[in-house]
Length: 117
Image (cartoon, rainbow, N blue to C red; front, top):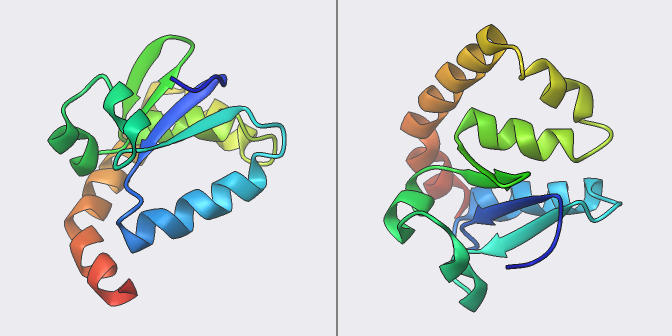
């Protein structure tokens, strides 16, 4: 598995994911995040099934597997510009709100993906 404080698995075949990961790569100037393509050879390092990894965002932070909003928050904490938002998400109420928003996003994601193709 690639080295970095945070490891995230992403879907390089999703146009929405590609755009988001490209932006986050640019923001991660310190190289704190290891971005792993689920469709590449390293994608097999994901500790959840491929189907689950493609359905929901996952990250590994300090040896702890996170998914959904918690995974995004871990990634934000690794990027100085987004760190305040990631730290705020450590509050359980804030994280619960972000998770509710993420679950809503998952319902519209297929339409957004079609629109971006």
